Image (cartoon, rainbow, N blue to C red):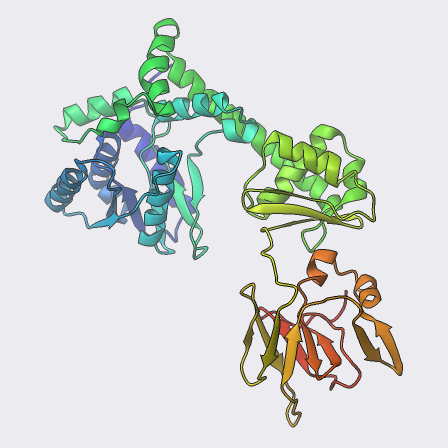
Length: 442
């Protein structure tokens, strides 16, 4: 296999991406001060006349190394010499079980804070990093998606949903080629001492395992990186298959329809479940939880209300639908509040209750509570049991428990956030929860 030179790789990448990314006006470069990022920054500066974009270097001070201040000084000095603007972010890394993962989260949050909509973020991961990532994920039991490892082109997750492009232009370049380039151009870089600590799994793979594999298979990093590329292709095909199944199995409210899913084979069910969760930006569960969803939730009786929870998500079933949602906070059953209608009311779970009154309509102050059971609602000359009305409206049980009930004295006037109301209430009065519109049907 022929080694790709850094200059060639970056030029080809930029030619390809700039042709399809006219809105990108600035290239933001993550610069740690290490070999890889210094080469990338130097190359982008050298190719400035070719790409014609402004540059911005971003350095993240994690505060984990006694040499971190020296790294800031080094990056600052180089950027000053090369006349490249620099932003330095000092972050606090939560010292949890996986310090590497926590540092990575803090780093990407800093990158997100540096970019605007017309930017692209460039990172210097290379072929050896890709091989290492594939091995690392293989040891953790990853599937096709995980074994795809890092993508050359992606999107930076941003709290503002900016959809800033994330580019890794050196992903097909070996670290040895980057080292050769740096030596040729007399570049200086810093060395993170934690990269030699074998307690970290990636370091163990990089420093102890890959060198041994390379003795038997000299092209091992290229082969593994190529395998990651094939996994990405396979994953893309699977996503296309899942999207096709979703048309028949996922409705407009992002609910999974149980009967058509049960008609699928087990592998297709697992594929569709993962697709459904990814479309809603939930973390994927492990295999054991996925099987619980298939066996305990999807196979449950229609009148059962089972649920399963993992980090940041829970799945619930009601009738013939599966719902995915963030874990619901508890609401106190005995909560009661007097409500001065001129002001929105803060509910105990953080939602906000408000009212919209038509011109000329006045409403006395009310009190609000959650369901206790036995409530009735007056309508069309009859008194209706609220439980039956909620069931007939198709509102899932866990939502019923959280619906604010608006009373005037002992009279239930409305179920906020639904179209259920007393006929004593003006038809255009609307109670909304969390700022959402008042639903007009089931």
